[in-house]
Length: 386
Image 1: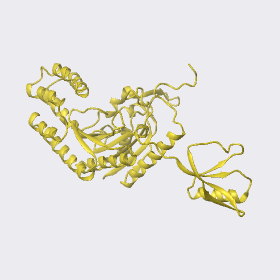
Image 2: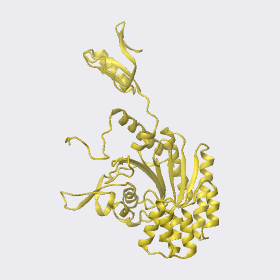
Image 3: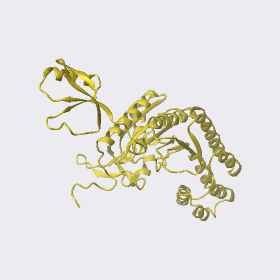
Image 4: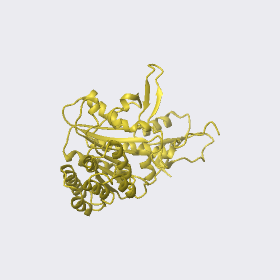
């Protein structure tokens, strides 16, 4: 094997794709700033116990570990940025009211999340801390939809779920922790046969409700079906009412967005504690963005307070987006002409791309669309359309 062959699911990003990734990254951060979100940049490396504390425990198998040569302590490469942002909110900012934060940086996974996924996603995310009402859930979901629409990935579908449904039914089932984990795995894979086997010894109503969850996916009728099928537990009723409220508000704001429900959806990170969502587009093999409420995420840092947010992989987003058009540019000759150099510098300060053609390379092409060129006319350098 060649020494320069990269590991599986790790890849170089070449110029055209890198430009598209960077353009969308800037668009996403600009969109978040328009909503009032402040940018933070957590470190790629942290002490392992900090990365994997509390809700971060679920990331253990996805986290690369190494030894810090300075301290001898074990460190980890972050596999998700949300626990780090929760630490920043709790310890470094510690604001009394609402805090809106966003981020964009690489994360690293020991194994790919999907067959064609990268083990080095570029994760963008936005989070609100300090507001327990559905207004925060709606704002985060609205921001996610605006961000994806700006990336031009085609028609979007929002799939809604709520972590409280499964949690309430598992609590009512009386199953021990190990069996509850098996139930969650069966629900995540929608394995009705396995679920029937696991729940055969739990109370009849709870077992029937857990088995019914596998079939509770689809359009609006799912919520009505759930009200008739699931036990009238307070958590269940509240979750269904909030899903209905959120769906109605998204429909009012985004007439072109489809909405569906999957009440057994447990995909994504395990720290969600309330409404959760996934957003899909036709060209994507998996959800382009996932998010929801995770009010427990700051507990381990000594500051449990409401939190809701979403994240996405910018690389996966670019792979699903329409190809970016070439950037318009100005072709300029290379010459030791002070006036020419002044004109080129002035154009670049105005934001124009000016590509100087080096001697002997006049016929080479690149990813810039040189639709104009600098020519000397009557002793002056002027921009002429090609």
